[in-house]
Image (cartoon, rainbow, N blue to C red; front, side, top):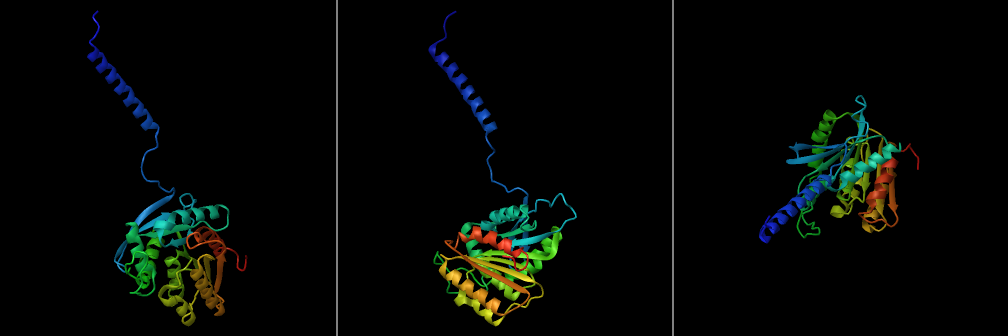
Length: 296
């Protein structure tokens, strides 16, 4: 039998090689993890539009481990500001501490905006600051909106918390507020102006420098009027000089008022910065908020 022309043999070998390569790629793709976003286990996302803020919020929910298996059980709630950056780590810390029995299993509710990083920082400036400061310019040189804390607190009080209590099995009057930086500043605003909303506050590196120490002044002239036992943890790093000094001043003002319903702990941790306080401060704060009264 006459041999095939070399052009035909080369074409056949090329086709055969293409088939082998295709099969290898298909086999590799089948063994490779599917591409996509990483999802946190035992979580869900909800949306809630606020008429008080005129904003649609993205709510990030982390369930306690036993939530779906113990249908009669109710859980404390931890509300997390700045959920774009804080939610995952806070939810994991809560899970680890609960597993060791150091805090109770808790429903974590993160408030997010689901927008660009730049727009997130603009909106947090709007919602987490107590009064307008038209002169304030941050790193981008622009004047960000400020002074929206009263409206944002209306959203939490009249829309968010009722929604959470209706949609999930929560414990009445067992609520913690977490905030860092502007979120910590916001927590001091809630404590002094709407103290009935939360009975535990975990406030890290609070931006009490804002508007000539506006919240420090308010703490001295308008102490919180409490109707329930309330615990406050304030944490910052000694490398965050202005922040930690104002934090200590705020704690001293509250403690000097001698309110028997209020217990305050303020810690300045060595070698921590404005950002690194998150880890140690979060763990220390959660453990203090749920420790026995007077326990170190």
